[in-house]
Length: 181
Image 1 (cartoon, rainbow, N blue to C red):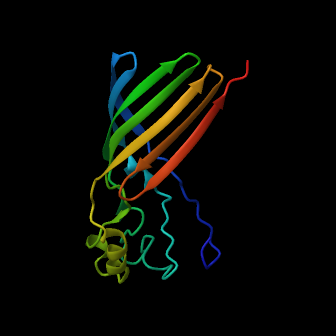
Image 2 (tube, rainbow, N blue to C red; image 1 turned 90 degrees about the horizontal axis):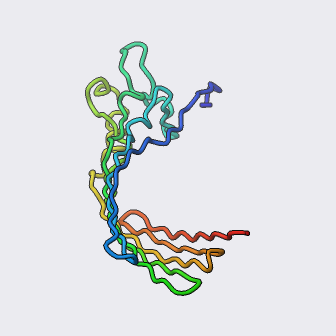
Image 3 (cartoon, rainbow, N blue to C red; image 1 turned 60 degrees about the horizontal axis):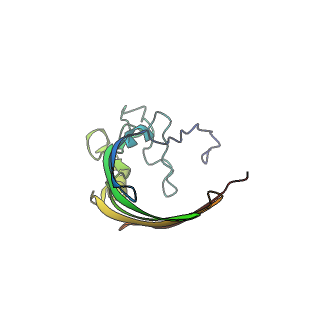
């Protein structure tokens, strides 16, 4: 709903991901893996895509009926990207327990929302503002790293800890599994 009380239906799209990978286990304790994923981020911009602009809600975000210029969604886009992942896992076997050590690297290509400046929007005052807002950060591909550790005890209890680190983000995940017999 905007300031006029009009309601809008908005899509929230989780982009499709297509992956292909390989793994190789040269020893019982050691596994190498690699995969490539294609992510369809462009599908996030739909016919019901909406930019919320609190500074100027009328900043040319819909089709202007007088000039027939399109400002949304056709002037916004997100590029599809390919990500690469590679890693290794070493497992240490003991009676009643298995411990795993994991490490890897990944690419994180630019998938920011972008604005098509100029063209049918050039005469609109919002063009320069939206161009600055959505196109200032230069596209780049970050390289990240992951590390993890896990232990499984008697196939009844398991705990895993993993970290993922790149220029733009860092996260730690802890998970557990309890198997009841």
